[in-house]
Amino acid sequence: MILAGNFGAYIDLERAISIGLLPDIDRERFFYIGNASMLGCQISLTDHRRFRERVAVRTLMTNMELSENPDFMNHYMAALFLPHTDMSLFPSAGK
Image 1 (cartoon, rainbow, N blue to C red):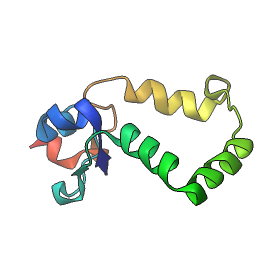
Image 2 (image 1 turned 180 degrees about the horizontal axis):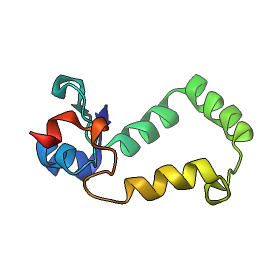
Image 3 (image 1 turned 120 degrees about the vertical axis):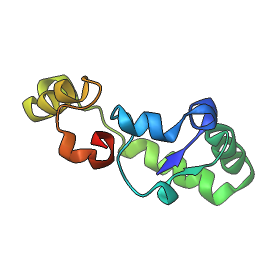
């Protein structure tokens, strides 16, 4: 899992996992990459091939209204609780 920006720089992994903010996975799978938006901007401006790819991807984007999807809303409402209502997703939180 990639963490970026100020959020990633200052987050306490164990506390974030214990309240269900982050997934309960092996801690070695978390990586901090710094200011990802600035890095992406620099890459787009300096690599013409990647810039053209981003222009092409822009045409593929669409809007999906998640609030109209009952399955999403069920998952969303369950995830609002800290810790998450499904504690089986966070086995180390119960320790």
